Length: 301
Image (tube, rainbow, N blue to C red; front, side, top):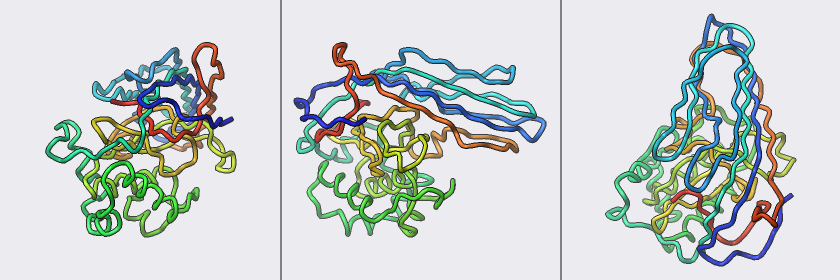
């Protein structure tokens, strides 16, 4: 259920608690295959893991690594020939920072922190250099700030059709612009490329989404965008399939190449992931259900 309530006071926080579970099923066809998974909830100052459980059906050890900048967590292991079932479940608390969109300004290149400059450059799936003239013509003369980001988001929603099965793992922002269809990953890549083309730092986030319309099918991993404005990262979901408040962060990177939920070296057979997610309705203890609001939200400073 999605609730619509009046906007919170500006620069306030609200808390969401969500529970989710992801189950992955594979069959390793070679003698062995190496797996790198990004299915663990990120552990950040604004997303706290209350409890979690990770299991692998085969008797093996998983090496865990956490990106010190963004809390992205990776599990690496070598699986042997035969069936493989992977399960991860977690409860997380997410504190959302609210901002009035009219107050958010673009940061001049000369003032962008050095560690954020990587999100101005083109990347594998976000060829912002190839879209510079196009973006300048469409959005370059608009007033800088969140209003320009919103214009890019709305432009994508109007022209790109959300359609399952129309793209593949190699589809880029340019491909999506030409084909005018895609899934959340493709919407995110196109938005990132267009924002970078007008000098707005933008990055790719993988996660889980609560509150999506059932017509889109079963729950799946989700991709959305963060843009850097007024010294902070703010959530923008160009696909529009769920309220931004219903997003759980898994990985953060330049594009999908950095934070794919599964990278596999070896021959395997795979099945669609089975995912469940719910939100805790407990206002007495300070937990709201995700709802749509007019504020712009941030969960990463």
